[in-house]
Length: 254
Figure 1 (cartoon, rainbow, N blue to C red):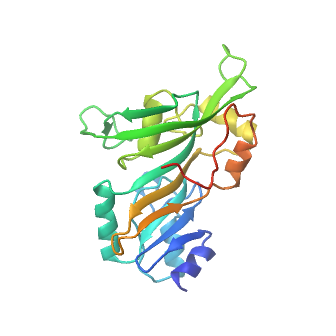
Figure 2: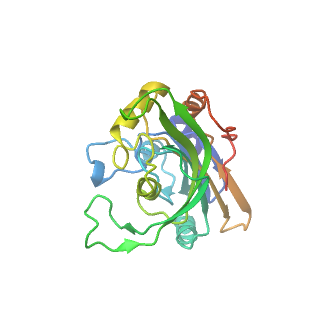
């Protein structure tokens, strides 16, 4: 089976492709490839594709299991090398859609070095340069209490643009500024995660790989690739009332 047909059969909608690269829409709660960190999980994007196609494919960037959205794969070792170098050099702009606790500033740059491995104590680890732009898109105040001191709870839709690709970078930076992502079972707050899941009707990490912008390493064509958020995001937006105009979710904000 050809890789494009394999992607469709594997439940991974094809968003864009050429002879060098392809872009899929990864659902939440699916690993990109198997990991020792989640060794009980036997399902992954790469397992699904390899079960259906013998074409050479390899992911060129990180995407957490719980995060939905745009996943780019290289179709040859040379394409993987070229795109890997482009990501490493900061030549790819990334935009993520998220829902955070509280109302962050309209615009902020989070400049906060991160330990290499978030699973281990940070003491003694090298800390790597990491910056994330956080843009508040819309605020909401829902009529349920998580903290006994308040009768309602505040959240905000945000666009996050990480300058690097450190592990859990957006999630750790959101926690660092006291606006953790809703649904984050590692870096977030369980009472808020459960309350929003009940209110919206969907238990998930509210983080979506929205888009990539870069110059194609083989054709020199400027590309702007988008993974429109799934129906649960429309459900979230319908759970207002929002205090600010909602952005068009089919167009990432770079």
